[in-house]
Image 1 (cartoon, rainbow, N blue to C red):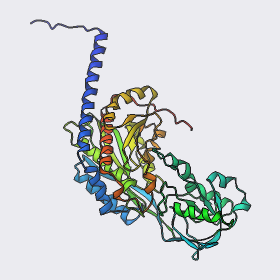
Image 2 (image 1 turned 60 degrees about the vertical axis):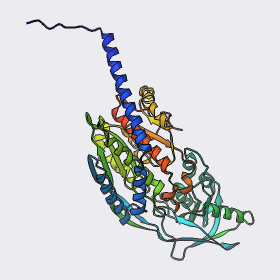
Image 3 (image 1 turned 90 degrees about the vertical axis):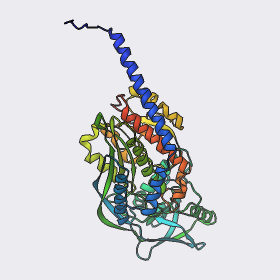
Image 4 (image 1 turned 180 degrees about the horizontal axis):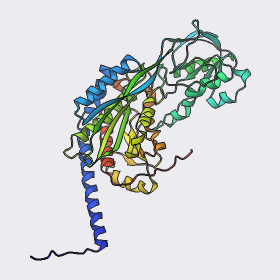
Length: 469
């Protein structure tokens, strides 16, 4: 018998061979990403999902019967699409019912105003509140005011939201919505009304969550439409004294059980490692929740379905999470982080679609600085779909924004949001605001991203510490 010949290869050659194999693997993965793009752009599945949700369920306020209807719809839809696993996880959520809202200027010129209660607000007395308005440009201006200026009055924060592609104007003005009631109450105000946190000129008020503080009186809080804020300003040009009668009848009704709804494409070689793509299932109660966040539900679900249909399963598990109760305080997102804490070390990366259906133009990430260039190179193929490389300062989206605190890398697929805050949190959030072609481009981007991350061999941890701006 002939002895086997042992061939010794130089280490440099072995390194070159490994590099060539890696390059070949990356090329194959990028080719699959291009195929996913083509399939997504030719499909209307994402739009069909949003259409189904808005028509068959509609508005789905957390803790309501419609919320549970949405959960059941989601389970049925995900099962019908053939995912490897579909399940739900219970989440306790606060229940708040909007009730009625009205406002009238009683002096100097009697006129009705279009308003809506802010989420979580208490009611006015049964006969309402009548008082003079005291106007402030910003929340900071209110903070700087004296108690004598505010006491016994209805505070009016008149901060306009600027229009930007990335929606950064919202981040500036939303503080008045969330924190204004506490600041006003600390100075003795009887109620607060804010200019809607929106970029539109429609006579529709934008709702949204506000907060109270233990030990500070809870005063009624509402938003008025932008044209009505302009109307108040017109009156204040003519007189220093404008009197408003405000009536709100919202009610808090304890807690209820909702659910995070989850679907998975099981990984082939690293099934315990997870690429998470999410959206939130709940919505405010005045529109049909099409852009916020029916669009996100359609985008991430359709993207994962495209990966499910591939002849080759991804290496890592792709997990779709449809979060509960985002609108009233990221309740589902916080519950997921808490309930999956022991598993978070296995989360490779996470991203959430919650900014409407405008085209995605950039991919930001938050990964180990030494991995940033490799991730940009790996995802460079997404430029074919109009998605350019971004920065390393992503927060991932509302429901995954707490995951970096647990060491989970995140990504933000940035959408063109120039018109998003025209419709956000209003009755005008309806299906007709979605461009099917733009939605398909989003599906393509999320499918490419999830596939490339599921196949990636780049070490993303430890993630950089958050930079204070």
